[in-house]
Length: 218
Image (cartoon, rainbow, N blue to C red):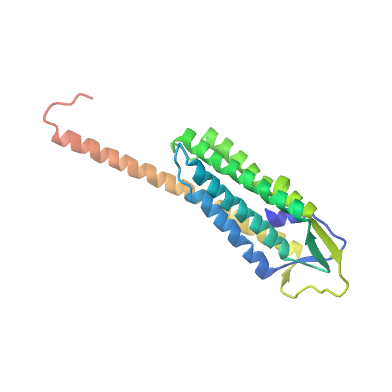
């Protein structure tokens, strides 16, 4: 999402991305995702824990953005406005709180009965826009507004960089592959859980019938 969004940002100089820094920017995003997955699915969430997890999640997304920005290689120097930089982080924290609150709302309303209920799809859509908003209404555009690029004649782009076209192709292939695998895994796990529930119910009914002292009318 970050690097595809960066394609909308154009400069009158050549821009490439350092491979090692680009890969390093993935780590905070993964850690921020773990915060979402590790948050307890309680119907009445602990507000202190929710606030703490929001700080960690927003911080992870913010780190992902600015480390990704540091991966940019160009004939220029980047500088940030401290006020807009701070505002972008605060917006990320607020939207992280919204995202985690929506997760609890979806869990409370769905009760885990179906993979994709209407409420879960609505919550997922809002949460997706909220997380995207960390970049497009918060982190991204506020962060981009905070950035100033000063041309530098003597700078040079390292050899270990990716062009924007190569980066787009890699991101598209990896994202589609991961999304497809996740959808397949979710469907398999859901069917397996249903199968286990059915087997448990059948075993319970068999035990009741075989051990009942009285007649059973069904």
